Image 1 (cartoon, helix red, strand yellow):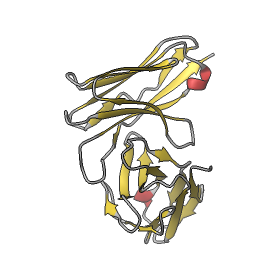
Image 2 (cartoon, chains in turn yellow, brown; image 1 turned 90 degrees about the vertical axis):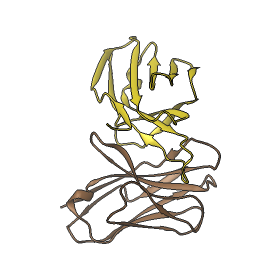
Image 3 (cartoon, chains in turn purple, brown; image 1 turned 135 degrees about the vertical axis):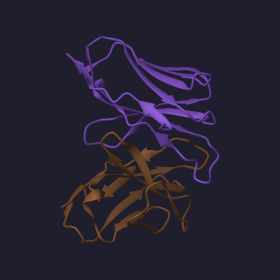
Length: 113
Length: 112
């Protein structure tokens, strides 16, 4: 079993739709949960960052963490064509010497005008 | 403030050739990382450097070497390139005590 699993998509939605992106993980010791957005031929950039369980909202984006289910989600409201990108979930906080970060493989999202 | 920069942007090598990928950051971060990204595999850590003068292996270090030249620069060297090293390479940096990593634009490497 991979440490972090993520549906690779591709996911295609019409403009204005609500998008739900999800990751599951196997190591209950993870404490920090992140979502990165990666545009084509660019490096990943941090979108959302959450510590432990709960919700965090930033504009049209909401990140949810359910540690009991080992499940994290990113919701995008009123999706825009500019949201078309690959979304990578990432987790850390295992207390290793280099603060190991595990990335999911990414979900490719297309928002159609 | 350029953030994390990488050179070259794209490179084609023949099997057995060597090359060095360069990375520099201007954010005064202590930690720097090299990842490779392959389709369906996500980002996999090759090497990291927790501070100037220290380097350690990540998940997939075989076939690579690194040098932390100073606080700003962290280079990745392929001594004898193999087709399995065809990938997109990303450098990242992070400040101590903060989980966020900042990534460079990537180097696309094709080994024939």
